Image (cartoon, rainbow, N blue to C red; front, side, top):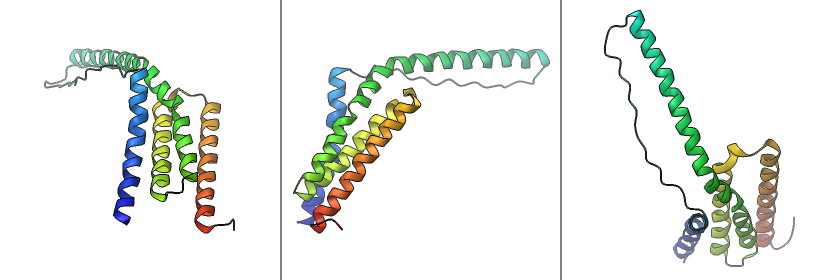
Length: 160
């Protein structure tokens, strides 16, 4: 029986964040991105003119890569923004899991909710202002503490 409960817990833990990701993808699909590799090789003796030309080429390549990175960030931002705004689903799963009487289901919802929240926070974190980060962490930590307390009370039967 414990193996069955473990399987239920792991299944919910994995499937819940996947469900949220797929739901976000239905509303705002992740853009198609082609990857490429850029390699630079210096295979000759360095004369002052050649060294200067190589340095200018390196600066131009860095500028181009930064522009491509900015374009990639701009293209993926709406998807990650929606994923961030889906974090309340993870918080709700944690709360529901703390009240669920079936331990394996409740634990799966709590863990899956935690993964969903962490994924939503991590994907859009660098675009948030400092106050928004603080509030998001405060809410997440508050709910995590509440869920932990609820689980301890539920397993012991009464508050300490």
